[in-house]
Image (tube, rainbow, N blue to C red; front, side, top):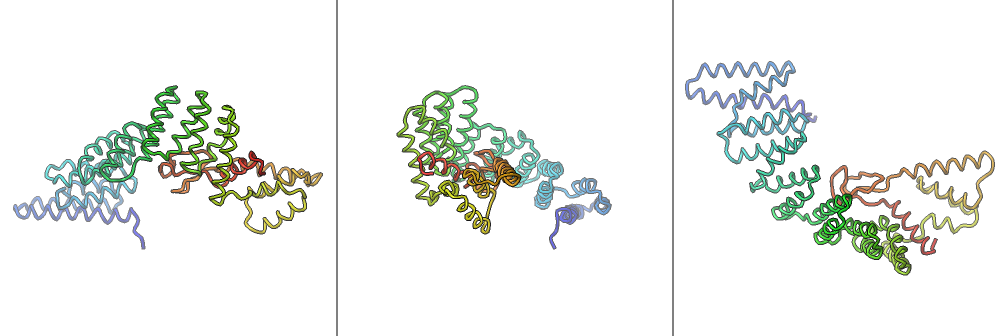
Length: 409
């Protein structure tokens, strides 16, 4: 049978108190402190009485007073504080860890441990300035350096202090050997977007160049370079930047297709646009994703009976909303929808499905499964950078558009 947090708390509090009481009693016994030992026993019984009567706040006060913190009992106190934090009772965790740090007899190693636990308490409570101060102090301690730096990066991300995040991420990479260049590139992109919003195009361009120096495969930097060039009317450079995305990560082609085609068109490079579309089709074919789409096959059909036959086969397999909608559109295009009430009902179904599909999520995190209708470069759920990708449906729609532009249906 699993022990929940509350049960564990009730078990751990007396243990903490008993350990401290026993240690204190041994010291008093050696100094013939019989009266003091008796006073300790009464406090212990008082604390147990609070606990039995479900008054954990008062019990905690007594046990913290009773269980003197020293190098022999600190592990119990640290475990108790961590338990409170996991249960969401951060105020209690903070009080315990502050009480530990206030003891001048602790070793430096134990003090660093308590400081790290207290910093995590503040981080959990959202008191970022205090957490930052403590983690900054611990970043020079070999045992906690890497963990403290990771927490500092987390804090600077929450505060959107991207410049400081870059500094700390670089140090984290040196200390831990953990690759951080891809994340640093994202920080530069964040700074570039801020500069673009403020009209600082030159500053934005500088950050985007730094992003690509840090990580040549940064799709976001290339997309932003394309957007920046388009805003400045340099459509040739914009098309070149969008074209680079195909080499960096083909899975994002759907995100640049329309902007790239517009840039090619405005620059008058129609041959370049066709070469761009051919390149997409070729790469999809190599990846095994370029076969004619279901929509493309339906568009090739000229007989409504043939469409109906394929639809009956389709619904016997593993149908989805997208597929049903495509068959209804194909029937409407062929002018085969039934007349009267039946035709109106089919049309209503088609429009209803179209409305549902317009609300379908187009992006999904490959790390945690979060999905949404907007692109996020940092997953809102698991906070991982670069893990959100277009869904297969969104890429399939873009591939279909590409084939249509090439005249392939």
